[in-house]
Image (cartoon, rainbow over all chains, first blue to last red; front, side, top):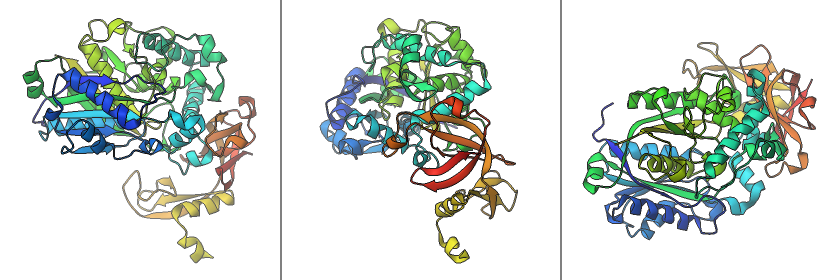
Amino acid sequence: MTFVEKVCVLGAGSTKYGKLSESIADITTQASVAAIESAGISPKEVQASYISNVFGVADKQVHLGPVLMSRLGIPDKPSLTIESACGSGSVSFREAYANVAAGFYDCLVVTGVEKVTHTGTEWTTTYFAYCSDFFYEGQAGASFPGLFASMARAYLTEFDATEEDFAAVAVKNHDNGFLNPKAHMQKKITIDDVMKSPVVASPLKLYDCCPFSDGASSVILCSEKFAKAHGGDYIEVTGSGRGGSPAALQGREHMTTIPSTKLAAADAYKMADITAKDVDFAEVHDCFTIAEVVDTEDLGFFDKGQGIQAIREGRTKLNSDISINPSGGLKSKGHPIGATGVGQVVEVFDQLTGKAGDRTVKDAKIGLTHNFGATGASCAVHVFQSV
Amino acid sequence: MYSKVYKMTIEEQLIEFAKQGKLLTHKCTECGHLHLSTAYYCQKCGSKGFEDNVLDGVGSVATYTIITVAPAGFEKYTPYAFVVMDVDNTDLRISGFMPNIATPDDLPVGIRAKIAGFDERGILIEKQ
């Protein structure tokens, strides 16, 4: 593949993640304004927006693009909303990336958003189940915790792992999220807290699950020459990969691996001309504790079945062998599903431009984001490098 | 009767067979690869030619979960299991709803199971 332009992230911003009172339109705009100001540009320089959102209907606002652009004072500029379940943010980022790389645009705002907590646990659980292969899964009462719990039971059956090992993922991510002022659950927890939390879908307990969150994240994506001309801190997108998996778990050859992650990672590593060993830190899709274990194996950081051993040995803690989810991940930072994939890029931007404060990954040069939709039916992986 | 079945949607056909404890599958006429009957093209060779192949809906539990926090409409059934079942003598799996499962002791992985019907809880699976 040949690209016309190198693509860079010039600015980034997020709202706090959690239960927010503002409207979906308002938080979409707040995050976008934060990204524009972080980049030191004028909204008039933005040529288009890419917006990721899944359940706008829950807050009575779909067609978010024109609403955002109107509030930014650029109603004449085009916009596009992309839905790919919990992977919407990274998939939208990828499409924005492709458009800058191809030379269609020099400067885009890429914003992800979700506003669902006001609908309550039962209805949020119900809406999310619509992201499954509904005929086979949601229709039969499968919730998302239930689908990942099915993967967790398969992992426990196949490998030398315990529920306490899964709990250690949650504890580690809460340790990181404790250092993140934007995190939904900015508190430390213990293995005991996880083990004693109520069962949601066995073997997963409440603290094995990410929270339902509201929130918005935004980045400014631009050509290298645009970034250079503006003089601020920027990072380069060096790899972008996509992949797919059978929509339902029943269609997977193995239920302890996510094929789309492997495909997207292979693509992204090849484009960036690196291997998994070169990655200094990664924001991975830990919607449930089992997911992070599977992700770190599928991304090639650990061999199959060894991800759990890595957790047990603390090899994925902040500033250990490879820092996994320095932001706190979906588990602690929160999971506003349309925003998550963009929020991961915000973390990588902050890490590689020295803005991550107490949770800084020391001497990091290469960061990776991994974000998928549903049980990994859709996935995008991106590689970023400091300049 | 056959013409009535023929006019059903592909999902309705699968449901009708599930109600009889059967699993309707599509066998590729080019390469023989077996799919659930919602497939329109062969995942292996890309061919569109399928012949119906009705299997006994029997197998063993590949994995499952017991759901205590349920989506809307399912609260009255908790706790229940969502089950992924390996279908005997094939590489296929089928998922479904299994009532009255409270603890993992009720459902060891590998236990024999069967398709037991279809209703507002989707495809029903029971222990054999």
